Image: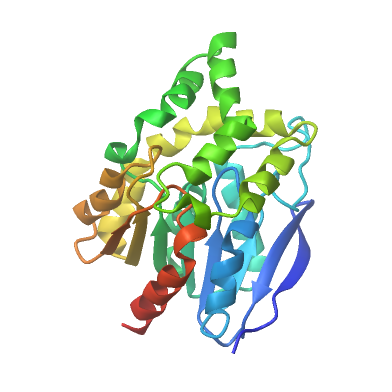
Length: 285
């Protein structure tokens, strides 16, 4: 039996964080951390499918979705700071023994929290969230150039990722059946991207992305030492975080369960039913 989803807000460090909540708090906790340029909306179907088995919480980061988007002069848009906000969110909701679901940006945020607070972690479910150099695809080249250079040309290249065609491409490229992917998803993401001042928020995070790559070794050491249970469900046709990035987790986690599916970056748009079954099976093991 499916449960009612609730749409809530909580103030964290002076910022209002929007989140979706469904399920019984007595069930295993599944914290869903979204990617760029999405929001908790990307988990809507999965939350419905898992609502009878888990207690699901999906926040929007500052600057994303329905959460506050303070000006870049008022809030430090770095992955360190986003992780601090989400860690405080976890404490505010008194979440323990968390199964972290991380996709794209969710990886750098979730792995920072796990490295600081390993006692919070029950397991990881990883969907195209990269932690290895070999997982970086050529499609990220304009962002790499922007990280390394402050030129107008580099910024123009990074800004291409904020345009509608790029957002649509992120959803449709690599999909096995693009007709399964609702245009509502990328249209909603673009609506948020187009808000006044949001371009500067996203550019700040693009510029800061290099700090994630610098932490890959630290996260890999965490995986090797702590050996967290990990389910990896990867869209193998993703041109940003490529197939090799999914397999690379086995370098440090030989017992990781890995599934490479015929899809792209936003795998849930096509495979939420299959992924829900994989998550249930993984947890029941």
